[in-house]
Length: 245
Image (tube, rainbow, N blue to C red; front, side, top):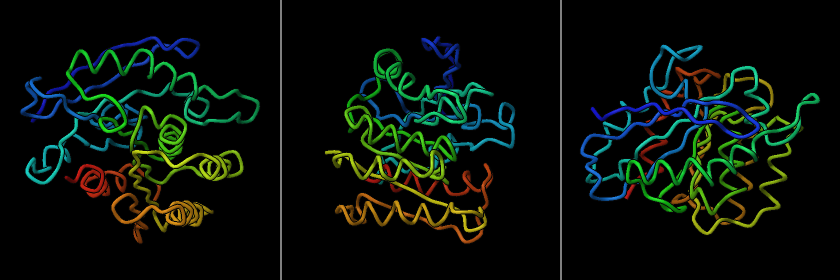
């Protein structure tokens, strides 16, 4: 088992947030290690801080074979509770201004340099991917296409593509294809509404832009619902896709 550390940061105009860092076993600092940056940090590891159970991402990472996969560190940023939608929604929602770009700017200027220096993590889009579920999945996709200089990949589980009347699909369509880009998107068939259809639309859009099987994986989970249990179940496959050698 690797090691954990919690660090508290103050995000300007957003507030104080806990950042949870997991370093996999064998990380001795001699070689810079890629990192997966995750939203909704309360849900990433343990059941305790999560509203409906944790993802236990560290357990999935510990099962990755270093011979076949690049084993990443994880840097998870907590959300602000009642402020979660404004933090993870890239556009205004019900009169509340978005704080997503402020958080991405803080990550670029403060968080990434700090954790990369402190834990000897790899920088640049080759060294960084971003992940989340639901609103966090929406934010992960936005972060990758908004700041491809920071993040070279995104794991988006059940992304809330309905947000702002589906504006993220149009946003991604209008952005250039990142030079470094690997995207995992999934959705559960039991999530209801337009969730699955919009996830399919995103996968079709990316495929039409030239994303092949080496850069895009869309998974439609026939028994999946919108909950942490199913995201935890699907995470190992997402990691194997993102970090295969």
